Image (cartoon, rainbow, N blue to C red; front, side):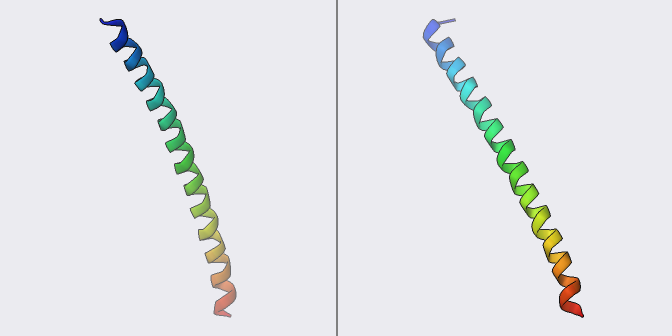
Length: 50
């Protein structure tokens, strides 16, 4: 395999790995925020009914 192509593939693989980790972190963060907001809505719903 050509050395230049190998280096390019290595760089693309590293970028893909970093983007995957960032995507997972954002997804987990968004999920936690949604859970917290849902819990707050449930807590305030019982207060507003009475």
